[in-house]
Length: 220
Image (cartoon, rainbow, N blue to C red; front, side, top):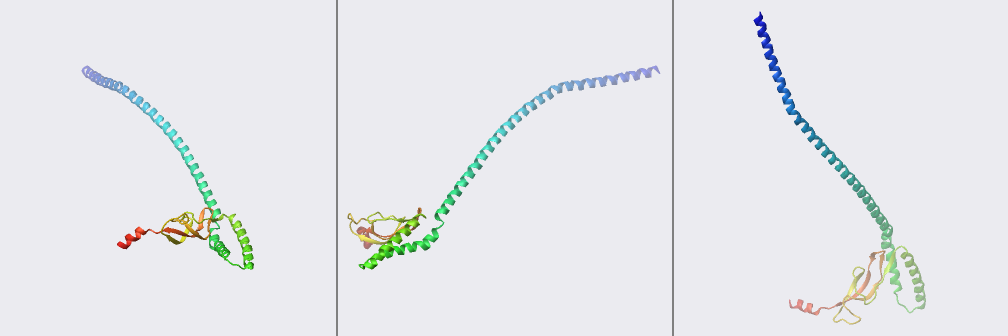
């Protein structure tokens, strides 16, 4: 009986020693692991600080972008308003273009053709003087709407942007009065609405005859 107790006690003592050794080993492992955990926390803290710094930088960038976006939106609105203002101004300037070009302009040209009529009859001459007075008043009223006459003179260089050459007078040599591509005669006044030519001046121009060119063409 005593031997059994001794064996049991020894067995228990052995198990206790094993448990104790295991506990010591676990404690040792935890002590070895603990510094690693502390190191990982330190790294995470540093990483967290870096992330916070990046977030702060991104917030600054975002704020800057928002400011630039606001400026861009404002600039776009300003430009849109300016463009609309220009369109409105153009509309006001040229709103009557169609009626002036299709209705009033032909009437002006007929007035001008009538005033070019030559006669020795005194009654007709007096009538034409009164007619011209009405015509001048009519043009002055239209001038207030932006319609002005385009003036061209004999001898001026021909400008196709405001004149239409309906006839060319060939010349073989140039003189003081007859030069190549100059106006020989003004047939009908032109008109422009503000800065738009709506009816070019009708003219005749001098054109220098190129004899060398004609000889070459005949020899072909």
